[in-house]
Image 1 (cartoon, rainbow, N blue to C red):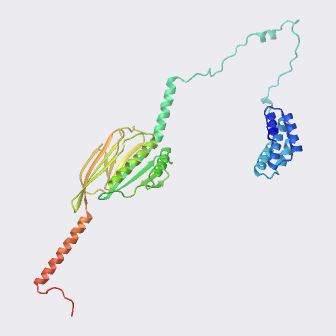
Image 2 (cartoon, rainbow, N blue to C red):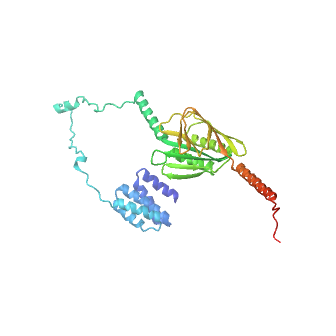
Image 3 (tube, helix red, strand yellow):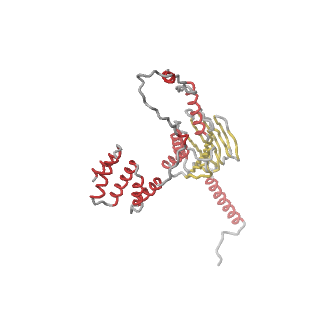
Amino acid sequence: MSAELARAEAAIARGDYGQSLEILERLSNNTPLTTNEEANIRMLMITAWMGKGEDQKAINSVRLLTKCKDEDIRFQAKQLLSILEAPSLERPANWSINLPPISITSFKDSKPTSIQRKRSEKVKVNPPPTGPTKALNIGFSSFVLVILIGLTILLSGCVRITTIINVPGPDRVSIKWEIESSTTQLMPWQLEFLSKLKESSPELRQTNELISKQTITSPTLHAKEANLLLQKVARTAANSGGIEVANPEFLLQERNWFVAVQQKLNLLIDLTNLPEVPGLSLSVKIKSLPSQSGLKASPEIIKNENNDLVWILKAGEKNNLILQAWRWNLLGIGVLVVIAMLAFSLVLQNLRLQLGFGFPELPP
């Protein structure tokens, strides 16, 4: 069966519709067929009839296939029937060129007429008005290439990234990233970065405040854990953008003076390999600063917003921030308060004894 069908399909492919119909009609009449095999043969016969121009036979066969039990075949048959039964449109007269009948006579004994002589002359063909097609010169190609590269950089760099660092207590750090695009939708870089970050750091919580703004929040960590997380996020962002940057360094040194903690924050972000991209803004915000005892930044682009320090990063340079501050140690203060209350209680008890009241006694 399969060999006969292959022969019929080959006959249709080479345009021999008559031989194809002989094979298909013999298979349809002399061989018991299942529903799918019969539908396949019918579809081949319809193709052959259409090739021979016998559209009515093709339409009748398609109408039979519209009642087939197979849903796919029934759907194909309905589509084919709508095409075959579509009315044919009349071709406008100006779409065709009618050539006058040409009588062929012997020119051996006759002399060429003036018309024939004109036709035998070489006809000069004018070139097209646009001229021949020429290859693009190097200057134009370079100009187009520069424009495309500029648009790519511009569209990929219209984004603002803010790293928010919060130090709520001694050796306690939480980091948050705000990524905002100037467009009304997420850019491909943002989608790839968020997807990779979700796989590598599932502990981070991602929220969408706006269509083009995302917030990534980390839990409260120790200083060493925060340093590792900051490096991982920076590597993921660089790989998503197809660039290479050095790992940032976050170092928090603390000295406990019992009632207060002296903290020294050293943040180094090396952006030497990052080119200046138009529309790209990078900044670091340090929230809820305690009383400062020293601040040094390079570059010195620092702003204060509601008791928060905002440090603007610069591409192509090493950005370094050193911040020293004091923070109260609540545990040490609590211990001092308990000691003071105990001492006050002892003083009151001593005064009671000096006044002659003696030690407190239970009632008889």
